[in-house]
Length: 135
Image (tube, rainbow, N blue to C red; front, side, top):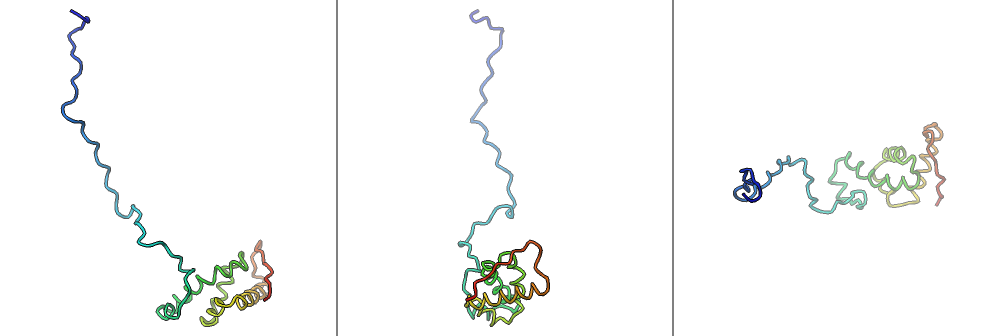
C-alpha cells in the first residue's frame, strides 16, 4: 500500500456550482434617500416678485420676506439678527420690500431696532452690537 492510507477518501467537492449569497433584506422605501429631481435652490436667494407674494397667504408672505431679510440683517448684526428680523417683520410688507431693495433703508431700520433694544435692556448678555456705517 503506497502512502499508508487508512481507508479514508478525501472529501468530495460539492456538487454543482456554489450557491449564490442570499439577497440582502429589502429596505423600506422611506429609508432610501430620494434622488433630487433638480438642484436644490435656496428660496432666500430668489428675488421676490409681486406675483410670488400675491399667490401667497399673508403668513407665507411674511415668511418669504423674512427668509430674504434675515441674511441681510445677519451681515449687519449677526448676534441679534433673529431678534431684529422679528421686530422688522412687524412692519407692513410694502415697507419690508423697500428694506430688501435699499441697503440704506435697511441699515437705518436696523439701527432703530438696536436703539429700541438698548432702551428696553433687551440685548442678551454676550451679544455683540456692531456699529453700522450710516449711509
